[in-house]
Image (cartoon, rainbow, N blue to C red):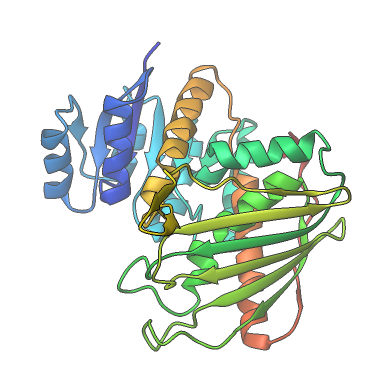
Length: 338
């Protein structure tokens, strides 16, 4: 069976996913697309040689009878509308983050999915599919270092992801990947957040506080420190060290050639998130295609998207209050039990 996919949003990330499905993955093809810019949608279809129809609206893509499943890569403020429409149509939907721009919007999606009685939504938190993170999780799941006590994490970018990256976006846009993948690693939820604002780098726009240090505590009492530095200049650097009862486990560094030359020992550092997580994107979508074809949903759920939204809201509040803020989550519905 070939899964027939409709894509809503043909910007940079949408185009990449369409290319991935068309030229890299197995078991799926794109048959319908939409973008608020029709010319862009037609250009993607032509450039990638798709046998796909361009629709005037995202809702038309969702309702198209030949579309089995959806990918939503439109602007964030449209995600809630399209995901709810996909649930209403009974069609599986992969939604890039954010699931919705508010925690309330995410909760509406959760409630709609539970009302539908079937898991249909996967959120694009790709780090769970990264080989390095999966190695680290295996070390934790096999009790190699004993119970985790402390996590020290780093998220560094050479420069701000976009010209309009400002305000609290380091917390609501960049760190959401940490918020999700660390819950997945620990199988634990957060209970409080504190945000420290160190001396600000001179090498970013005035509207952006950079770096941040985020301190999270979990229900099991694990202490997590996340350094977010989106203008570090030197490269794209993701780190995670788990301190356990009997040892430590660290996220492996991306493989690179070690060079000894001219009295120096050096190795390359990646500068793009695309290079760091390209394989994870491929694995993420292949697993989604395979699971969807079998009527399953095994990746980050709508509930996970909701928890991340609540966590980022608490971090924003903590940043501006200067206080330790509670992260108040209702119990996970049995519907989402793993």
